[in-house]
Amino acid sequence: MKNSTNDITYEQLTSQETELQDENKEEEGEEEEEEEEEGEEEEEGEEGEEEEESSDFFDPTQIRITTKQITMDLLIKRIEYEEINLNPDFQRNANIWTDKAKSRLIESLLIRIPLPAFYMDATKEDEWLIIDGLQRLSTFKSFILDQKLVLKDLEFLKELEKNKYSDLSRNYKRRINEAEFIVYLIEPGTPPKVKYNIFRRINTGGLPLNLQEFRQAINPGQAIKILKELANIPEFQKLTSFSQKRKNRMVDHEFILGFIAFTLISYNCYSSDKGRDDFLDQAMKKLNKIDENRVQEIKNKFIFAMKAANNIFGEDAFRKIRKITEDGKRKYPINKALFESWSVTLSDLSEQELETLIERKENVKEVFIKKMEDDSNFLESVSQAATKVPYRFDTIKEIIKEVLSC
Image (tube, rainbow, N blue to C red):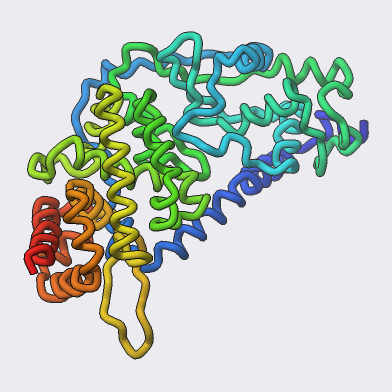
């Protein structure tokens, strides 16, 4: 071996670990850049509101986290028997690292570079939920269990390139299997609100979980299945046109949850003090508890609303509309506030009312544009998804009523 462990300097190790971290974040950085480009106009709509960390007080004695030293051998056994969930519903990309990044991680094990700790939700003893460290565990599975990863672009152990796990000598296999990791486990009995806060604080990867991902992490069940199903409705996909990377961050799920929230809970019950995030949290919990008949009713209303919006507004659905100017018509980004208020209101229409609105769709757009231009309160209410909620719903209803009464 050209480079023994003793010949590798601290500076080299530090350099490799830094490079590994940078490599792993490249794709995530590209995602952030794309979202910035898509969001250039969003100060008026979709992502206008700031996501605030919950400041709700909780007793610190309720935090139950234990620290364990676990070998690779034990981690692999848990993965093999599906006792560690590598496909959590709040993270759609469980295997996004390049083969080079994965290979460098395995090389780090072989030259005994200490790796960061793992964080897991151990509420279920027979199924740990990975919170932080998903890509590393996916790499271990790919190399050791699946034996699909072939080492490449190594920095120190060049002679091991093109090797699979089965090709390694017993000495190297032992180094991998006996490697130890620090694992922090959130224990059973930790209240959901406490767990939610913990998730937010300890998920420190290149692309931390957003609020919807956290929401789905702590509310497993039928709610997630419903959101996934509705996200695949053709009309919804056509009207929203979210990129795959935005879908990977559950942006589409949050929009749909907004519709469901105001369907399950009247907008008149919305609390500005608690805010939109709390409102969506409560809706997620309710969605997990409702019966199949109510679930089907919500699905039908959502599909009805998407078809209605498409027939009335087309590509302008759930967006701010401006009159055509000399420079041409500007297409605004999808707007959370308008999506919620228009979709919920449209879902309550009768078939006859919808037919009338479709016949008078140009009138609908004209009245809507006039409201946007003349009513500063309405404009403000749709510029921040968490503000003046009742006002925007009432205004949308007024628009529909005015057109129907013509």
